[in-house]
Image 1: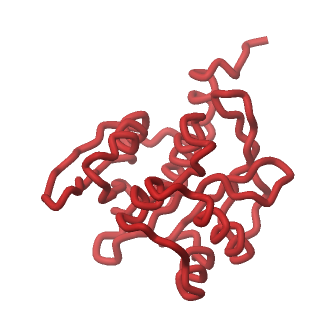
Image 2: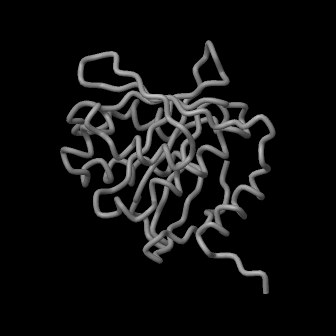
Image 3: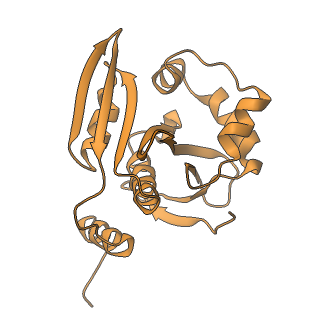
Length: 194
């Protein structure tokens, strides 16, 4: 599913390119994991993940873009991966999907996570997903704050230091993706009526 990258301007003025993941992204994905701090690795994987097996890399980069979607962000004209957002549908309840997002440490706090999340939520709705879920560390307040920028987040605490998050992304009358992006651009002050 080779699609041209979408250029997105972040809140700090920098641009990134976001596109669906491809098998050729395996090497940058592996390099990105190596660059992550221990804290970021632990927040994403709930363990200090040191590397990916070949099977894991294949699973993470060879996706069907329907039941399993993943979007990657790169700096324009570079091969350095800056972030990944993905959802995997629940086979027993395909209207629900598990969400995961990771952003390179030096790109956190710039709006990249939100840019990836917004595009992933649009793709999820296109694929019939109404609800995104995630299991995160209870101490990871950043992900809860990020998700709250998209909609209300239901948080439950099953124990063991983790929190289960749920966010409903489909509206009763869904706004077409083009209109949602126009509204987001207007909110960012990027549209003019000239």
